[in-house]
Image: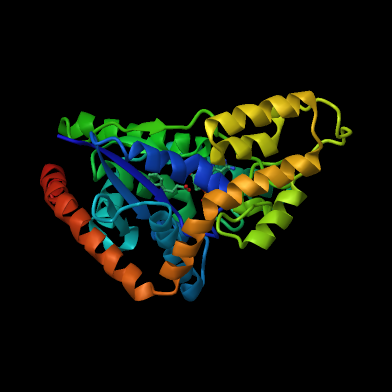
Length: 330
Ligand code: ADP
Ligand code: TRP
C-alpha cells in the first residue's frame, strides 16, 4: 500500500519564489518516491476566504494548476484536482467542525494574526474576519484526513494547521475508534522562510514577492531590488544570512553553489552576485515559464485535467465518507 501525501495551494495570488521553494519544490521532490501517492490540489474554497471576485478566483486557480504542471507534475501519476470539484471534502468539513473546539480555532494563526492587528489598530478584534477564515483549519483538516494522508509537505507557517488536523482526528478517533490517519507536516528545513524584496518573509500579503514566472527582463529587475547590506564589493559576505545565496542554491548545481559560497566569503559585489543569481534562475525557469504560458492560454485543457483528477479523488473519497457517515449516525 502506498502512503498518501496531500498538499494544496490556495489561489490568492501569483505563485512566488517563497511558494515554489517552501511548498511546490519539496512536494514535487517527495512525489518522486514511488512509495507515495501524491494527492495535490488547488485550494479554491480556501481562496474564497479572501478573493471576492469570481473571475479573479477562477483565473488564479488556473494559474496554480498551470504552475504545478509546468514544473513537472504529471496528472497521470498524481491525483490532481480543484478542491471545489470534490464535494466529499466539503461534507467532511461540516462533520469535522462538530469535533473541533472553538478554543483550538481561536489560536489558529491566520485568524489570530488578524485579531492582533485589529487590536493594535484599536479596531474591533473581529473586523474583516469572515467565518470562512475562522474555520479555515477545519476545511484544511478535511482536505488532509479524507485522503488518509501520512505526510503533508507545507511551509513552516502551515505547521500549526496540520497539527490542528491531527488534534481533530484524535478527538474523532477517540469517539468512534480508529478512523483517521494522523498526518505529519513535512517542512523543508533549508528553506523554511524565503525572504522577500524588503527583507521580510516573502508573502503576497506584504507585496514583496518575486513571481515565479515573471518575464526575464522583469525578473532581472526584481532581483536587482532585493535588499542587501551596504558592504563594499571586496568585503567578505556571509552567504548564510543572504537572501541572494538562499535563492541561488535552490536553482544552481551543487558545484556552482559551493563556488558561489566561497566567492561570497572572499568578497564579491552584490551587483555581480545578483547578476549570477539571475542567470541560474533564468536558466532553470525559462522552459517551465513557456509551458506555463502555453497552459494558461488553454483553460479548457486545464479543465479536462482537473476534472479527470477530481474523478480519481472522488473514487477514493466517496467510500471513506460513507464509512464516516455510518459511524457518526448519518
Ligand atoms: P503567502 O504568504 O504569499 O500568502 P501562502 O500562504 O499562499 O503564501 O503559502 C502557500 C505555500 O507556500 C505554503 O505552504 C507556505 O508555507 C509556503 N510559503 C509561502 N511563503 C513562503 C516563504 N516566504 N518561504 C517559504 N515558504 C513559503
Ligand atoms: N492552508 C494552506 C496554505 O495557505 C493551503 C492548504 C489548504 C493546504 N488545504 C491544505 C495545504 C491541505 C496542505 C494540506 O498554504
